[in-house]
Amino acid sequence: MLVLGIETSCDETGLALFDSRKGLLGHILHSQAKMHAEYGGVVPELASRDHVRRQIPLLKRLLADAGIERSAIEGVAYTAGPGLLGALLGGAAFGRSLAWGLGVPAIAVHHMEGHLLAPMLEDPAPAFPFIALLVSGGHSMLVKVAGSGKYEILGESLDDAAGEAFDKTAQLLNLGYPGGPALAKLAEQGDPERFNFPRPMTDRPGLDFSFSGLKTFALNTITANPDDQQTRADIARAFEEAVVDVMVIKCRRALEQTSISRLIVAGGVGANRRLRARLKSLTEAMGAELYYPRIEFCTDNGAMIAYAGCMRLQADSEDDLAIHARARWPITDL
Ligand code: KG4
Ligand code: ZN
Image 1 (cartoon, protein in one colour):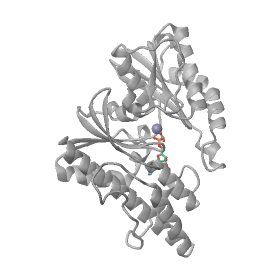
Image 2 (cartoon, rainbow, N blue to C red; image 1 turned 90 degrees about the vertical axis):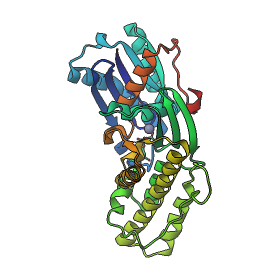
Image 3 (cartoon, rainbow, N blue to C red; image 1 turned 30 degrees about the vertical axis):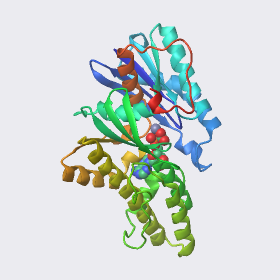
Image 4 (cartoon, rainbow, N blue to C red; image 1 turned 180 degrees about the vertical axis):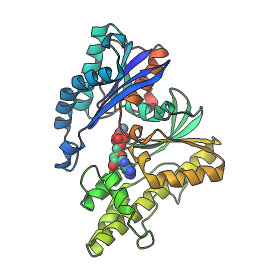
């Protein structure tokens, strides 16, 4: 089955073609990051309008590059939530209407299920069951995945998501938007010994996270120290060490607690190099397997939506003719 995937939940317009027989046939992405940069964050109304402007030209290019006729599309998967409602509605209306016009089924996909299944696009793909560390700009959670569609949340952030903490701390360091990659780059020049940030919620049992205190700790450290480039790099490094350390500790606990020996990492923060290196050491020491999507499929993309949608369409969960969009949508509702 050849499925078109459409992702418009935030500031990336992503489209992709996934074929259940041949795999991923093409993907295309337009990032709005530059457009939002001057405002220091995503402006929802600008995001919605831009998705609507981009999606038809992107679809034409995707089909042309893959050498595929529009009429060959056998199903359409679109992100229905969670995300910015206006942004979601653009892709949902487009996807649902296109499917209706083509006379093929459509499916509303959960954005986090997309992230969670993104490692399945790689070779080798992880087998079930596995533990998923999902760390994006909007969510941080540890999920026990027994199979496709069988998700149990083991822990999640009680306040800021990991990516949100990266972005907010980056803003305090005047690194612009999106701040995560810029902060990680600055941290490479930092001295890990100069500042020591707390490791929130690691001194008690459980798998929940809390990252908002680290942003406050960063602000206090910035205020109490001279404002020079080395100090900023040292603060970035200490912040990154703390966030990564917390995630590694919680992953170890989740693997031990469930006796599952397979870990997958997905979502934008999964692109972080220090996190990847630390999780590699952890899983090697535990004799566990570690899987990631390729870097470009860690952040938002259409390929993960096409894949998740294809799995659901093949399981016969086709949608009605309604256009579905939900700003909030717990993954446990699936
Ligand atoms: O998954 P994603 O593209 O969008 C959401 O669904 O939220 O994740 C974006 C988040 C942003 O907060 C961004 O700063 C963060 O992922 N991010 C990173 C890195 N690359 C992206 N955070 C830390 N280190 C990185 N290398
Ligand atoms: Zn995402």
